[in-house]
Image 1: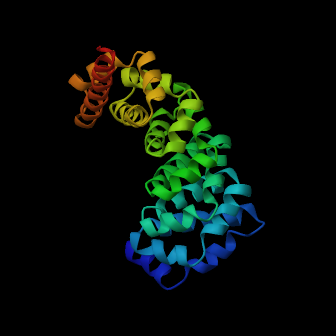
Image 2 (image 1 turned 30 degrees about the vertical axis):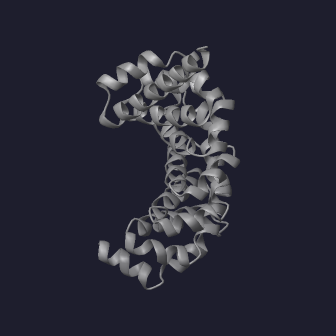
Length: 257
């Protein structure tokens, strides 16, 4: 079956399905995007599907398709973005704004598909600023409410966005620091790792943000994480605690006559 799927894309047979994404018939559009999602799963097909011009029609579906078609469009973009060269084209296409809209307005599956696609796109450095500029941080912070069922995916994406200055500013401005500290205590293992990664970036790059993290009582959960967390979480917790210690020692040295 995989060989058949690969041959379909290799022979250029994805083109008719891409054309059908522009159909006014919502069911036809839905079936076409579902087929393309299945074709895109094979790594050997991704480049040929991108080169056939799928991105703009997928954005059209994200903007105006049925609920299921929108979700499958986001899932297709996630699948295609597994390749770096595809991340470049998708990021430069305007798809990020459409994915952020789905993150806001979609049902839970759509939100998860959009967050997964945005996370994959954010692996490419140039896409991080685009995601921040599209207003994603505000909505990711809102989705950190446990009742939304999106905490882990939101924190993972925020951790990636915290590696650029505009991402850190947006995270602080949207009131995310207390939520990240809370996740150090109550989150899943993966959530704690990503919360610690985001807090580490905030602390080492901006003294004001570092003080905000301290004011939120981050030291006790960081100590606990440094002792009982996963390997990655321990490493990040120890790095943050070490940074706190260095700041304190520098302050004491300045205070000496």
